Length: 346
Ligand code: SAM
Image 1: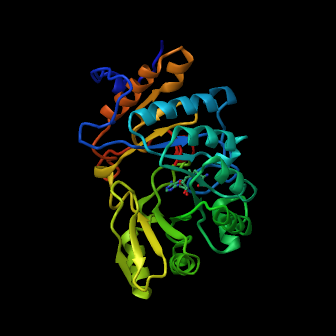
Image 2: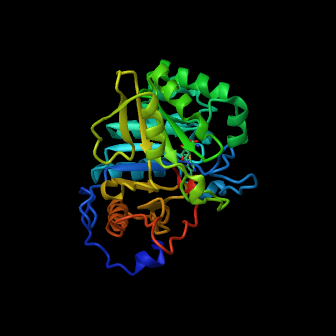
């Protein structure tokens, strides 16, 4: 049996095995009921803040099979995970994803969502909904075709906007639109996105640029703080805070006249680690307890060595038990993680 602990995790005392019972509570009392599953590291776009042009992808054999993902999903459900979000890479690049959605839906999560660049979504929206997907988050960083192409380096805006319509027609709602705001690149579109949220009813979420780009080009001045975006919007369209939904990363605001909603994911300037409820499964089967921590434990190795579900549960418990109180981006000596966003699964 080769469970491959990260050196730092290996130094921690092994948790007492607890069978297939939850919940997954860490040393700081945070209950982990949300699992982000990356189904592939492949992506058909090359967003400047995420993935380089000359990326090398994992060999197919290193990826978890659908059966392995579903098995981990069942163990996670038994331990109290209620919400699953599929991501990547671009999750729709994984062939037959609808089959995996059906397998996960059978397990009975209360929320089974997908984050996608939507370039391949339109024809798949209805089959995904029928298989049990509940909603989608679509990434879209500009409402101007040339700029969209410049930031994402591939794909086109019209396809993504059409896919949003298709997703809504299939019932994959509420539809959230993720916008990474970069200083000097798309920060002049904040009000356009606010108008878009008001006109469409889609929840636009402004995300701070995080030090997770594969190129290592992250610099604080390129980041636009969520609070700055909120005050730009509020000066034109008054906002009223909405009740947070506990551990959700976005700070949510409704437009005061009732026309729609925006959110701010201010991971760098206003970290929300204190309420973090998330675990991540990478496409190659590593459990990560934080986007910004290199600590990983392989469930793939456990499964492929014939390990039991109880052993998988122990891996999840060990990952949760080793979680740090915060991501430390704002502390001296912070080092960006070795794997970038598309490799981990955002
Ligand atoms: N390919 C899918 C997509 O585009 O939504 C899913 C994976 S993508 C890595 C998930 C989310 O991470 C997207 O909303 C993307 O904009 C965001 N993202 C990627 N790199 C980021 C970074 N360095 N800082 C902030 N957000 C980032």
